[in-house]
Amino acid sequence: MTFLAPWWLAGAGLVALMVTGLHLLARRRPRPAIFPTARFIPDRPASAAAPASRPSDLLVLLLRVLAILLLGIAFAQPQRASPRRTARILLIDRSRAARTLPDSQTIAAAEQADLVIVFDSVARAAGRQSWRNDSSGPSTVRGSLSVALLAALRALPSLREKGDSAT
Image (cartoon, rainbow, N blue to C red; front, side, top):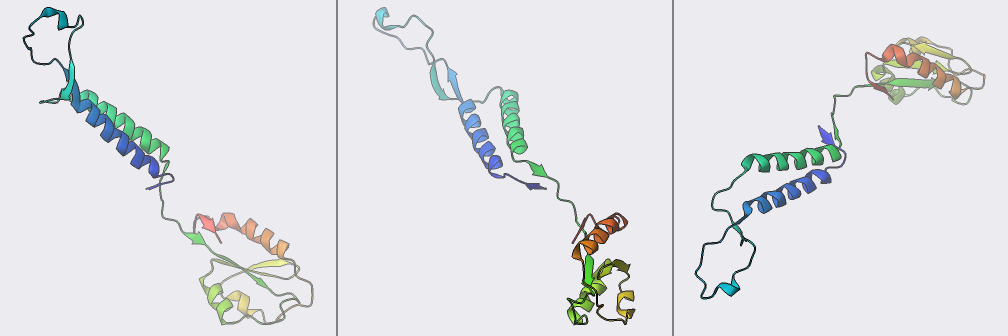
């Protein structure tokens, strides 16, 4: 699993630590002390912030921290990383613009490709090996890359089981 915005996780962790620290600083009643006169005693009940000797309301603390961490995970945008396989389509130009025969790199790429499309003015789907059997060499007509790209787009549904994307 990957996160598109992982800094939200770090921020949520810091906020959860602060909430935990504030929860442990509980307000409690101070120890009674004897005052010499009653006029210095405030009219409201006295309380002071002090570290709790024994934490209380742990379920409330757990729910607060859990809510903060879940919000951090939601804002971090988790993405399930699935194993990807790419189907390869190779376009080989046989028009007059490509007057050379395929070299060793082209042959090696064609052997690894899932689909080979040979094109000049017309695109033809060929197998991994059958495109080499075409001994005619470069044609004399002007090539059209858009025809080859359309043929590749039409062939994509047949490659669906070989990969979830194509190059």
